[in-house]
Length: 272
Image (cartoon, rainbow, N blue to C red):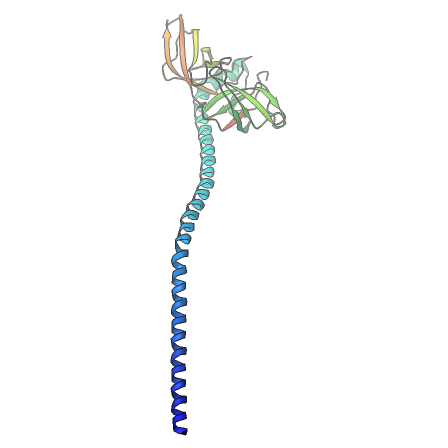
């Protein structure tokens, strides 16, 4: 009897162990299967989140970087214009400085201080062309002061506030600029005809007219609106009588008047 009970006990323990092992195997298998199933369900959503979030992150980063690039490009355009203007002034100085400073007793722009300003509002029309800047009376900006950018003269200050000013561009239909060329012995007046259009003079009496492509710079005559030597425009066409007769001159502004971001106000007044 004892032997039979031992056999039954051993058999029972063996069966129990087999059941436990089977249960554990099934449990692990089921859990693993569930985990795999969960991964299959969640993975597409995780992939979608990654695929969506990464471009958004790149887009935001790109927007920030693009803004920086635009700002840098605007500043570089401004600095390039400054360098171009200085080169043109040097060219004009060789021909004008001695005569004008000696005979007319006016300062040359190269010796004058400037105030850098940002363009805050740009709203030209077909005939009128003005823009606002970020510097005004508190920074020494006064009505009548010349404004240069992008390599040449762009206009003059027509109104001011403590921290801002309005500039009338040389292309404005009400603008006139006294210019000279060559050895600075001849001067005439260019008038604006609207943004994007040429500067013109319809009847200038010149013994020797300017050549096509020749640089015209401010003449700086007493009572004039601008000091001498500021690059204004290059001649695009000359028509009419030569010699002692009258000619019509058309010229394209040196400065790019359509893309103004930063400018320099020349601290010079017509009465000085």
